[in-house]
Amino acid sequence: MEEQARLLSSMLYHKHRQVEVALNRSVLAWKEMGRRRKCSSGVISNSAETAHSHAVQVCEIVAVLGTKDDQDNAETRRSQKKAKQHSQLYPHAFTVSYVRRTRQHQWRCSDVTFHSANEGLCEQWIQVINEQLSFLANRPKSLLVYINPFGGKQHGRRIYEQKVAPLFGRACISADVIVTERANHARDHLKTEADLDKYDGVVCVGGDGMFSEILHGLVTRIQTDSGVDQNQPDAELVPCSLRIGIIPAGSTDCICFATVGTNDPVTSALHIIVGDSQPMDMCSVHHDDIFLRYSVSLLGYGFYGDVLIDSERKRWLGPARYDLSGVKTFLSHNYYEGTISFLPAENNMGDPRDKLQCRFGCRVCQHKPSSKDTQWEMSEEKEKSDKDGSGGWSVIRGKFIAINAACMSCACPRTPKGLSPSAHLADGTTDLILVRKCSRLDFLRHLVRHTNKEDQFDHSFVEVHRVRKFCFQPRHHELVSLEDMIESPKKTGFSPICSAQMTCSYSTCHSSWNCDGEILPDAAIQVSVQCQLIRLFARGIEEQQQCLLEDPRTLWAVKPSTH
Image 1: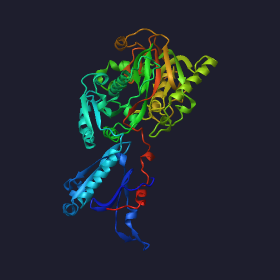
Image 2 (image 1 turned 120 degrees about the horizontal axis):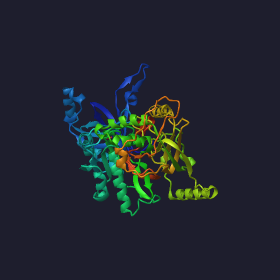
Image 3 (image 1 turned 180 degrees about the horizontal axis):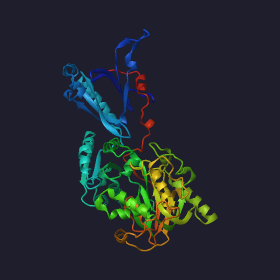
Image 4 (image 1 turned 90 degrees about the vertical axis):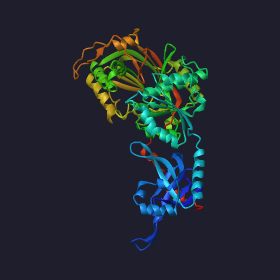
């Protein structure tokens, strides 16, 4: 850590032991002071130099409060006599609440209490720490919270009230809470009624469907207020200034898992409190110059579209309907003919198979294409178009079991790597995955690789491209209503799983697009990636080495002005 001048340094007491506590603009640190003792070599050593040091980044301090001595921890209560003596000698105290990392990317709010005989000194510590926290302008002070009481296991309200609201209160964050009463309640409220100027962010308590509601409401509101026509596929959309927080309370919570690394409400609440900010790409989906939806995770045609269509007929089964529909769709093994056209990303945007995963501080995502970059890219496309007439676009025709577009890894607890493990959150691209007609056994091998460490793209019938735009046109473009597709399942016979032949069932009807768990009404679509259109209260998944502070002993290198 770069040496900084100490703002404050004092000898205090923690758990009946004397500690030296020091604060600079970046770190709060403390170390236990010990008695001089002789080593086995006969040399006198100061145990304070070898004692464990503890450090907390100032940006990860949740709050600091004055503490009454009788609110001490369980260890003190177990020694009543010692506690009484201690409280008489050092009756004043303050408690610092901070982020503590545990296993599997989970965060917890921990407390450390320091005691002193000097009341004024404790008040000084509280004042100086609060001053440093006030300089953190990215922290929210007022939030608009939407709770979906019906999503997942229907625990949304309880999760917020028991796990999240107390943390917000401790961090002095005010929250206006709306419990949704119907589908698209949050979307409609954001589009027309919400006074967005009052808030520093919007929080959804629910699953991926609830997040999609808030996303559509917020983005639509911003474009409407800015006079942008969303029906124009090439319109330059205005980024959202308000960040979105996700408190996971759904069935899958894919977006939370892919941006934080865990589906834990407390962890997500702490990311909101410390004011993390993670930019994120979105795909805008159009049909014949008519806006359909936005997608942030999976846009799937064929297999995943058929799974969703079939699961809608089994909503009474709850989350289990996805497993049942998945097995049924796999056995049906349909394929669909069509033409996919795409505009590849530049070579410097990496490759979907380069094994470079998007993590906290991702260098790929830190570069947002400027308008100058975009103009250069368009001129380059035009130059290439003049030469070969393609405009830089690639065209593939064929028979596909699945066509998937992933703006993120789409990782979740069931598939920890996701559909595209090296997809990036904010690089302005999506990974287009084409699974061609193959045997049922080969397709099973491809699906199984989503759950292990093998390369799921290492098959002759699978190809993946990193793209900025793509279009799809089904061969049989028939007008079929959503109601007809949901109510009238295809009648396809099941053929042997291990047949050596291509045992796919060809359907004369087109499939449907699964757009983040919603069925699109049209199969022929145009898709454009909107770079960093929204921001989440997240920071991306941290690697283990990114969680470690630099040696806190560097804080002791600066000469203190002790109190």
